[in-house]
Image (cartoon, rainbow, N blue to C red; front, side):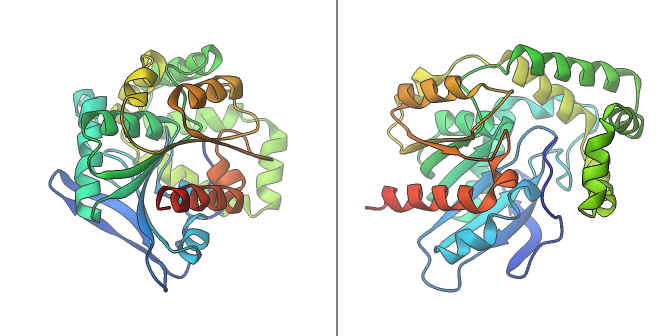
Length: 289
């Protein structure tokens, strides 16, 4: 589960509901004070939310970029059906992204973290026209690793017999004590309440449907490579969801810019936000040269 450094929007970051042709989506939006270089649309990963990018807004605004992070359909503060899994089919989520891009104002630099990367890829393959570039953060070529598939299956099995509050309690009971101690030293009691609220508001059908996608996603790298769009593969130095060598190979297949963020794992956007923001800004600057 991704862990944002904080949940409250900092100064200069506006929280609102982004109105689109496919409904409203909760968003966090930050714009630069000086000349605008471009706009980025940020898509969170599995069990995540728009807050996973919260520490990127200020450094990217300082470099001239507007950033709009959204909760996808059924994620955290965006509406979605509780039990209708068909609403969360990848094609539906991809069409949501196209509508979000249109509402924000195209062209946009599209960024997807983990599951969000698979959705971003699907949107680009559906229609690349609205996008200035694509960055995949810790998001691989096909299905997730075997060990992570097992974790997702456990979650899906639990959701079949328990409600979201019961599943949350079960997850916390399995968390190693040292992780709880570290979180508490960092003010983790408030942080844990924010994480719990995010979990409880996420729709079960969204988790079940997108969890299945993570475990069955086909390799679409060749399709994406054929799209004439600047591409960027960014990850931490370690990743147990898609191993780093797999991401290295995908970047080669895509002829993409490759960034490895030191000191980060599966969520460089929360682990090392300053380094991640700098890498994104440098890539976007390059696309405009």
